[in-house]
Image 1 (cartoon, rainbow, N blue to C red):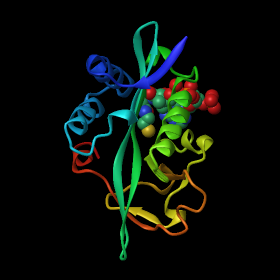
Image 2: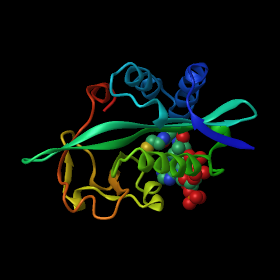
Image 3: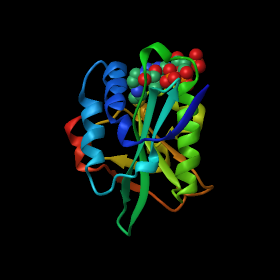
Length: 172
Ligand SMILES: CC(C)(COP(=O)(O)OP(=O)(O)OC[C@H]1O[C@@H](n2cnc3c(N)ncnc32)[C@H](O)[C@@H]1OP(=O)(O)O)[C@@H](O)C(=O)NCCC(=O)NCCS
């Protein structure tokens, strides 16, 4: 049986390892560690999938802001997420996303953006973000830049540029 729960201190090393194995490099694992040290880090939105006591997957949602001419709105960015290669394509990633989005909603967030695989995230309701009036300061292909409204109409009143925390610049 697999459970999904917020990370604990004892998971830090395993989270690093799962990310390094899944991405085949350390950048994302290092990014998580940098974000964890930042004031805006939300531990409840760093979730692990645990099976037989082993961390087999991880997802993180980080605060970002959407800056328009008139105002600045809080949102979340899904990044990074990783499933141990031995456990991929078994639904672990989907369960992490569904549970994570539920927690984001519970904490009052209305908008989640992701930069990632256009063949994967649309099944969870993510749509092309530029079609919804969002943009981002660094070059990202249209199909990879996606957004999900957690509340109906959240994006009708919110458009502008997504500002990622500075830690992301290291890996973008
Ligand atoms: C992407 C990832 C998190 C998905 O986790 P998972 O547990 O394997 O996903 P699920 O079992 O819930 O879903 C499997 C589906 O995801 C699809 N998928 C996996 N990787 C994909 C990719 N790179 N691009 C598009 N689709 C992908 C599979 O094809 C499969 O599709 P199907 O259901 O139509 O057959 C996992 O493959 C992973 O860790 N990849 C390496 C790291 C990475 O790319 N992270 C995401 C950064 S955006």
